[in-house]
Amino acid sequence: MGDRFRPLDALGFGNAVVAATAVALTAAASRAMELVPDPWLLVLAAGGTLVVYGLDRLRDVLHDREKSPLRTAWVERHHRALRLTIALGALLSLVAGVRCGIRVLAVAGGVAALGLAHRRIKHLVFGKPIYLILSWTAVAVALPWARDTGARHVAWTGAVVLFAMWSNVILSNLKDREAAAKFYPRLARRAAFVWAVVGTALALAGPPSVARLAPLPAAMVLAVIGFRRSERYAVWGTDGALLAGALLSFLV
Image 1: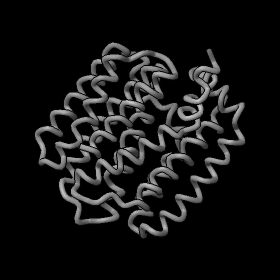
Image 2 (image 1 turned 180 degrees about the horizontal axis):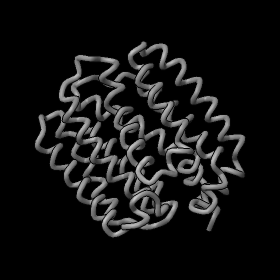
Image 3 (image 1 turned 90 degrees about the horizontal axis):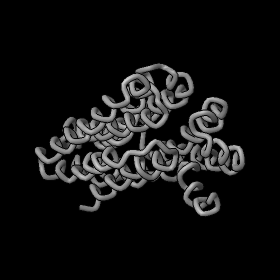
């Protein structure tokens, strides 16, 4: 059974899925703000994600072993490959950041600082969800805006992305029984559904370019409906829905 999932585990636990999500989300948000997605900005989003998530996987094995045993076992078996992806991500981020300019570097630096503090923040009841929601929204929305201040519908786009991410983070916390979801799991799942619906409604009520983002929160509605407390669902159901929604939003 383990061999059957091995290639998918490499993509999911090796952070390829989350890096691809950062790229797709940034590209989709850029289009919603009526910008042409900047290739260097997308490289920065991917590289930075590989660094932040890779370091977290390596540094917090003891904490993760209890709640994510499959992922932890994969990390321990492939720690050298994971270190290689971190180094590659750092190199890509450095080159892309220099090409994108000082404003982008300032935003990316703030997000990176929060990401490197993830190990401590994620133990706080409300610290982890707030930081994750704001960080992902900053990557998708603030980075393109910093690259091109002629962006339009920034607040509207940010709201749609924020509600989609809010739903995503709640589902992630439900899997691990962390944050408020630890105490109110049923209420948390309902909240994830509500925020995804709110995000969808906001997108559909927006200008044409923002309406294209509707598949993003709509995909999270489906993820909530099909929710399962498993590590692979967390990757391919929860985060996979975010990736699929972002790709659809970019392509429509």
